[in-house]
Length: 330
Ligand code: ACO
Image 1 (tube, protein in one colour):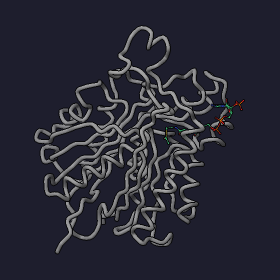
Image 2: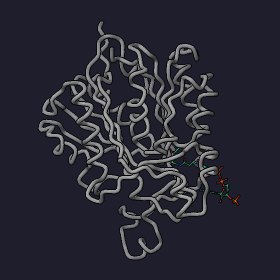
Image 3: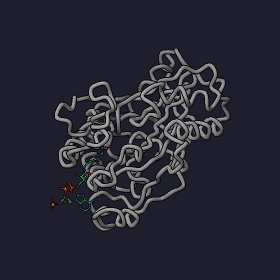
């Protein structure tokens, strides 16, 4: 029997023009280009300066590019899933705003919150709608305006993140390519190692929450680093073993871009050489849900039909996971 899968048929992106280099950060906090580069691999990140624009705008621009490349009319999109931790509003979902911005009149749309694993969770979800025959064209977007929740007086966290978005169009595939397998994990972060403490129903916004800077990201960097390194490396190896993939069978690792040292540890664990690893953290920093589709965008011309890709991420929640997909664009 013919197996119906979901494959990526186009990739789009949006990156703000403004580049904030490590040298710019040196001017506003006690840090150095050397420290940031050696501890994280980041050289610069993009920042969305226009106060009128946010996550939905970036997601819409990325989606328009993906649709135009695929030659698909927005009116034919069935579903939009937008992964983000920086939605324009608490509600409505930014995916609903994207739906209107791009004119996807018949699509239903929702946001998905899984922090840095958001794009992977959204890709799995979108793929399953297609595999089940409930949707034919699905936009999966990762978009985050991280600068909106960064405290530039906190040098341990603000240096890590940037703004940006990527989007993929998923369509039916019967040629053996597409999403083959996925593994996802969650471990509730009750210790508050990686949080935005206020603004939700637990700590609604007040004068005090603003004064106490509780609307910014706060994290215990060392704990997150250890968990992320172990989580991403373990799950990447697990999905290879589950699908009988040897290192030579894997064409590319597409890792979440949080820290170059986490990416290197994952590649080592998988037995992959550095030429098989997509790395653009130097240019964009950690764009949270945007990192993986932005890698696919930057590398799309190097990908061949049938290439085995392992996508892997770890993030707040804690959430982590890996997806095995066969590249399906000829
Ligand atoms: N510039 C200069 N010095 C700094 C800076 C900075 N920007 N930030 C911290 N330091 C100092 C610290 O104060 C500390 O000084 P001390 O020894 O005098 O106390 C020293 O550098 C070492 O600090 P560590 O926290 O041990 O540095 P580490 O090597 O662990 O790197 C980092 C910190 C980059 C945050 C790392 O822990 C990390 O990447 N953690 C993962 C966090 C992450 O990626 N979060 C994103 C969301 S989750 C995800 O995407 C996976």
